[in-house]
Amino acid sequence: MKKKDDFCRESNHFLKSVCLALCLISSGGSAVYAATLQTEQTTLTVRMNNCTIKDVFDHIEKNSEFVFVYHGANIDLHRRVNLDVRDKSVEVILERLFKGTDVEYIINNRQIIVRRNEKKENSSLSIQQAKKITVTGIVKDTHGEPLIGVNVLVKGGRTGTITDMDGHFLLNEVSPNAMVSISYIGYKTEEIALNNRSSLTITLTEDSEQLDEVVVVGYGTQKKVNLTGSVSSVKFDEELANRPITDASQALSGKVSGV
Image (cartoon, rainbow, N blue to C red; front, side, top):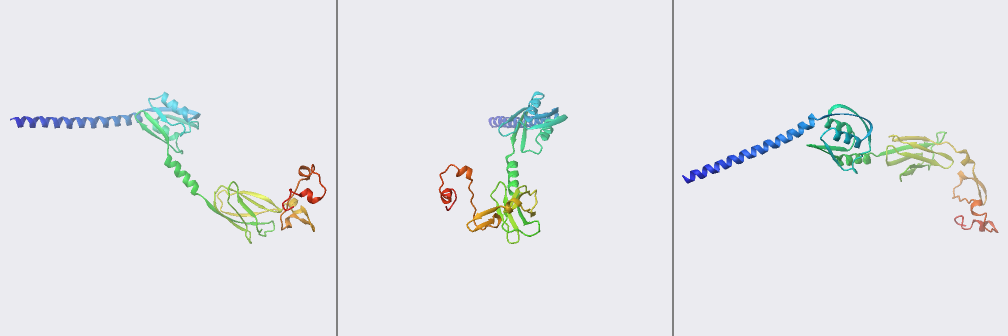
């Protein structure tokens, strides 16, 4: 008889435990359903022009039970937007607010957690870094003749080259929106935006001032453009006017390399 009573007590305890577990599961499911239902049923009208993200947050908090949680250093709260939505859920409003950005949000009951999507940011950065192109081209004069030894440099970087015997050049790992500078003695320097182009044909025009410039050498005068050696220049008024000078070599001593 005693064993039968013990069995009954154990059975009752087991049934109570099962009932309690079912109640907890049911109440938890109801809480999740209630939170989801609250998000869907809470609708707002937002009509704001040239306002900041922070202004939109304040408006939503003022007109609903939602509270925003975020780190100001990771979110651009001063970004200006225009919003015109009527009777839309908070989720729809946030989708429009952060469309095309690396910001994501999580709605947890009455809390809206806003944060930067680091995976999306790193992915976008990797795509930009990987998007490099190879640029080829040819440099000619106004008569269509190829120019040899023309300097071709990418502005703002260390990438550069010179044209070969046929006037051709090649640049590797260049940003598709880079600026390319083309310079050559006796010709006007050109600066060209690539604008996603990978092939260029460049015509340089003569610079009459540089072509006519002459340099005095030990055996006469030559045009600067025809010189094969290096050329140094000294400004008399700035560097020599206040120095006691007895001969030309003394005047140039310390001012020109090799003298």
